[in-house]
Amino acid sequence: MPELPEVETVRRGLEPVLAGARLSHVRQNRPDLRFPFPERFADRLDGAAVEAVNRRAKYLLMPLSIGETWVTHLGMTGRFTLDGRQLGEFEEPAPIGEKHEHMSLCATGPTGRTRVGFADARRFGFMGLVPTDRVEAHPWFAGLGPEPLGNAFSAAHLKTAFEGRRQNIKVSLLDQRIVAGLGNIYVCEALWRAKISPLKPAGKVSAARLETLTAAIRDVLTEAIAAGGSTLKDFANAEGGQGYFQHRFDAYGREGEACGREDGGVIRRVVQGGRSTFYCPACQRA
DNA sequence: ACACCTACCTGCCGGC
DNA sequence: TGCCGGCAGGTAGGTG
Image 1 (cartoon, rainbow, N blue to C red):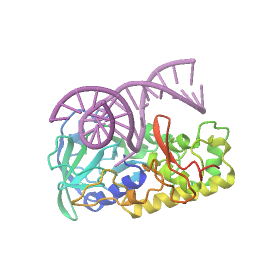
Image 2 (image 1 turned 120 degrees about the vertical axis):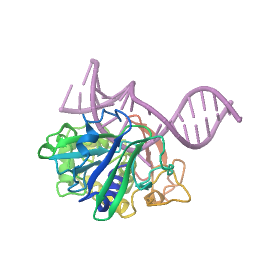
Image 3 (image 1 turned 90 degrees about the vertical axis):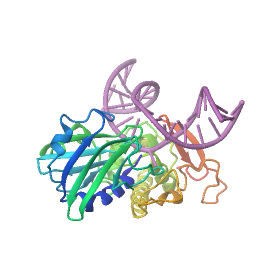
């Protein structure tokens, strides 16, 4: 799944085609993704104009001319296609008309007419229609922590959020109520950069380390966005954009490899909260 | 409230 | 070659 950098990459791909476009020929191919589609979803989208393509955490938000905002979460395998070309490819590109395309539509806007598809093999993604003036109050958004690239995110914020917290810092950083948009890859990468042990209780990380961590999070996300996100399952002959940040992982997915700091450490994989954590026991000791 | 566990779903990969 | 277990970028809902 796409984490914040991948969702942002998708947002930037959709924006030129969808912002200002009118939707038509909306087709919904099954009743649900992770959750049921909204009532009369296709009918409500049909004829609406998209006013903007925004992102909050890992959600895409498209306010529409009908006073509702079309919300999409990509889950683990969700992806949009434009004229069959994939946007923010996280896996090998699938043929046009693939079996996992669950909705599609036609967008007519400044750049002409484009076919937009949404595919999601695992169906952990979901879509909603939320009144635009009440998006912030919706359960999906009400509890979210600050954007890690925004002004509200700071070492002081983490200090407060981690106060008295005995849970390890790795799992804590995945908690979207504390900071919104990080996922398994970028948490591992940020902790490696900050030389913080993922096993350390969140409440016991020093203020100085939280300062380093805050910068590491901003840096890794910024660099990943600039690289177009990460594409995990590599492929040779891509059409359309592919992320390149996966080539710059220092920890994620590198179990058994030498740590890039050349301190003799070897990247280890452990399981925390049911998910893999990659880290260097030699340099991530703080 | 917090910490922890499980479920949701399909595809791919490595081992036997 | 085929089957089987393990693993995958996320979130929600339940439990003590």
